[in-house]
Length: 191
Image 1 (cartoon, one colour):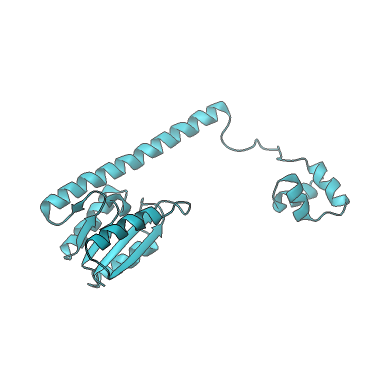
Image 2 (tube, rainbow, N blue to C red):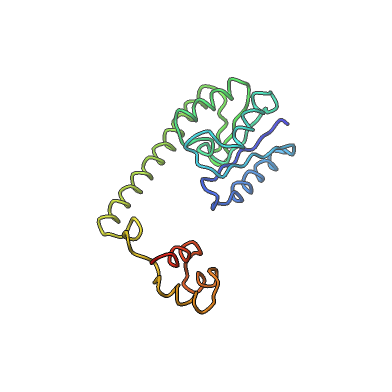
């Protein structure tokens, strides 16, 4: 293997298809066909990601000569982790390319640009967390965050008992009451 592609999406609900499509176009345009893909569906807050760790192993085993990413922040959203990773790869003789930023990070200029991009990614992450915390605080003040108050129930325990008396199973009761079977079990156990 000489070329590796690393893709990361932040959550399992997100789709890597758009990154794959754009990187595929870039690879085709540069005549690169022998590629190994590494795809993670985890946060960029740390480097503990299974595919990223496999990529690291391949890099330090000398199996990778070029790493292609959609955008530099796909490697990390931490300034320190991103710079350390990129520096280690470049010092190992690996070429790192970000296709959307149209940057090749070889040399001192590449490292300088990378440090700025990683700093921006980290700032965006912190800003998002601050906005989320502010939104949660505002929702708590309005009383709309934090779930139900203790002692309240989603449905009526008496209704669950009535349906059970009619011969319905817990799963049927749960479906009827739009709740989980675990909740039905709890309702049925109430005195």
